[in-house]
Amino acid sequence: MNNFTFHIPTQVHFGVGQIAALPEALKAHGATRVLLAYGGGSIKKYGVYDEVVRELNNAGLPFAELTGIQPNPRVESVREGITMIRDQNLDFILAVGGGSVIDCCKAIAAGAPYLDGDVMDLLTGKAMAQTTVPLGTVLTLAATGSELNNGAVITAGEDHKKLVLFHPGLFPRFSILDPAYTATLPPKQTAAGAADILCHLMEQYFNPAPGTQVQDRMNEGLMRVVLDNAETALAEPDNLEARANLLWASSMALAGLQLMLGKPMAGFPIHFLGHELSSLNDMTHGVSLALLTPAWMRLVMRENPENIAPLAAFARNVMDVTESDDMTAAQQGIKRLEDWYKRINMPANLREAGVPEDKLRYLADKVMEGRQPFGPLTPIDANRAEVIFREAF
Image (cartoon, rainbow, N blue to C red):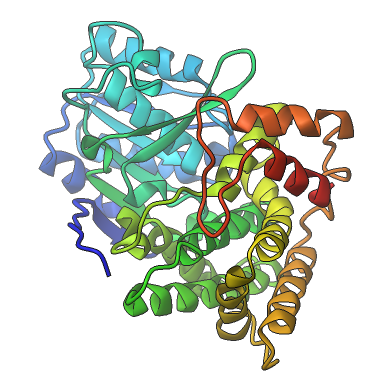
């Protein structure tokens, strides 16, 4: 196990009714004027908005609203939020929604104090934020883990390029996680969120390193929790125990990248590939990951026999495969994973998801823009990326 430093400054209020903690949480972090940010109308339809506004009023805090934040959040929404903070002297950001809303708010938090240029300077690495506006979250979707980490992904440009932003000041000051707020999600969002959580876990699990037993056993347990509780939540949408377990698994999957501690960071290849699918046709992030994961697994097995062992361990410890032969076990594990995706109603392939075949090489080339070959087990280049896209097609 390699040396590491671990720190998560986010305070978590977990459970039904924890929105009542909002006034004190805001006051504890010096909020006096709040930017309330959210996406579409679902938080109003299902009462979350009313509860948040009630608590803001209880706290006596004025607020301005940034609405319409899209899935795969756009830099245009980031700029709008930055302008609101500057023009209205807002000093705290409250993100109400899922990962897209939170990521947008993180970029706003970094961009608002940056006066030497446009927020794209920060997103492209041309400059680094020196300070950030504090933010908190009220989570409505178990998926990205953005509520407990300091990263964000923003979509920019005509080609919908995905840009990643990290900064130590972007950890939320607090996150309110009420499983009841996720019970009204459409089944597709619940399923895609579960696929996203599972992929976060798998991408860390398949960054192997000697001596990381704590990280890997924790990871296996979380993966099993996601596999079991996603199906329960879909069959019983009001099952708050299943919702709670998915919600906490989402947070734990990327909480300060704790499951990567002590491991080399070789990148998240499935996520990098999936970002290109989302940039092409706004495919839901979790759906893109579900479509690509089995194809990535098969490619790394073919490329190097040494990669069979970690896939066999996944098959036995997570997918309950009992086969003693590693190759057979790994293949059975991939098949069981594909069966799980089918049971939660993920599309069968890229074709079914509306990806044109003539775009596959374009996607493979695009994923390599500004990158060297990436990923653990087998580094992905443009040719291997194309193989994965075609196998998933």
